[in-house]
Image (tube, rainbow, N blue to C red; front, top):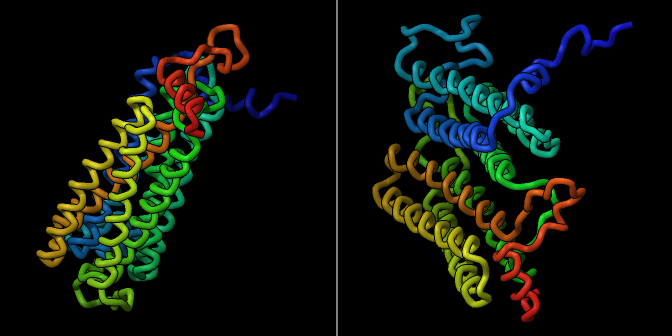
Length: 342
C-alpha cells in the first residue's frame, strides 16, 4: 500500500531535489526574514501611533463578513489593513528562508527547525494581534504583542547567524566571567524592552481616537514609568561600557570587541531619540523611530552574546568539528583562559 509521501510528495523535498542554493543565497534569504520582522514592528507601531488600531474593528475579518473592508471606512482602515497585508509579506520572507534552508547541502536539521520556528512565532503573533483587536487594544495585550515581535526578531537573528556557522558544539572565545557579564547585559536589555512596553501602555497614544471605543490604559503616570525606563537604559549603557573595557583588558578577539562597540553606538543613538521624544511630549514619528531603535538595540545585544562563541564548520570526513585546529581568535581565547580568565 503506498504511503502518503508517495501520493502527495513533500513540496520542500521536491525543491531541494532540484535546487541547491549557495550559502550566500541562504544568508540573504534569512536576512530578508530578519528585515521583515523589524519592518512589521515599525508598521505595527505606526498603526497605533496614527490611532488606527481599530481601523478594522473585528478579526479575522475587517468589518462584518468583509475581509478587507471598504475605502469608505477611512484612512485609519487603510493603515490598519495595510499592516495586516504586510503580514503576508512577512510570511513570504520567512517561507523563502525555510525553503532555502531546506534545500541546503548538506541538510542541517537544527537550522531547519529554527527557520520553521520563525513561522510559528509569526502565526502566534498574528493570532495575538487579532486578540488585541477583540479586546479593544487592552494595553497589556498590546504589550505582549510587541514582546512576541521581539521573540520573532530573536529567532530571526539566530537563524541568520547560524547559516554562517557550522553544526559543531560551540566553543567559547572568552572566559566564563565575560560570558556571565554578557548574560547580565542581555537580561538588562530584555528588562529595558519590557519596561518600554509599559511606557507605551500608559502613554498618550492608545491607538484609537474616534471615541467609539473605550481604550483602557495602564493606570500609572507614564512619566514615572518613563523615568524607570531611562534608569534601566543607563544600566544597560553602563554594562555595555564595562563589557567593552573588560574585553579590552583580557585581549579578547576583535569580534566581541567590535560588536560591543556597535551596541554602545546604537544605545547612544537610541538614547538621543528617547530623550528628545520625552521632552517633546512623545510625537508619533519619534515614538515609532524609537521602536525601530529598540529592535536595533536588541539585535545588537544578541550579536554581542553570539560573538562570545564560535561554531566552526566540520572538515570533510570528520564526524565533529572539534578536530578542526583553533583559528587565531580561538587561540587568543585559549591564551586568555590560560592566563586566568575562566
